[in-house]
Length: 263
Image (cartoon, rainbow, N blue to C red; front, side, top):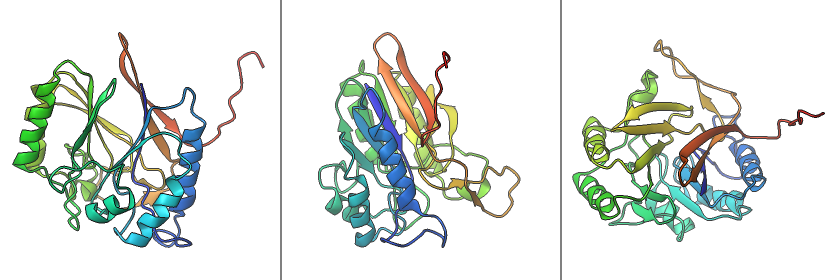
């Protein structure tokens, strides 16, 4: 099973640019084109939040157009910039749903369990007690199936101060870690939000952050003013094979002109 993870496209209205200079639509077009060239063909594309920038219907309409060329199934999770009801209206078959939140399960050779950490318009995230109870039940129901838990906000501090100020709540992170630690079939906890590739041991497994399809958050561990930069956009490619486990590749988006070793 091959799963493509994209994150944080931050789409705005047609002909507009984010922050006055980031053409997020062009970046997402490039990401979609890249995904369409992947061989073997992916089984699923998972987008882990901040799909648009202000949660407006016009922005989601633009996102619908940009994602239309994808020929594989989509699973869309909300981030702190997304309004779940407006997102679901634009993508009624691609957004998980449980009691008004975007929680759900996608069954397959690898199970994907989606958790909605968004609390729009708050920039930080949370997980309610009922979500953690539901997660416990879902994981307990199929204890031998390799599983990915997907969400927007990472459940750990990154060291980038201005991003950690809008993190998943401590109670949500602690509660999630306790649940994950009881279920060794969880191969990954995959996230977005930080616009960088970051990983950490978490609950006996690996929590992994996907970089954004557009701008990167500047890596700054010295608590300077928040900044973004033009690092190349990238995606994560999660490959599962029986007997080999789940292997995750970071792939920079675009054509980088491979040359065979015989040339």
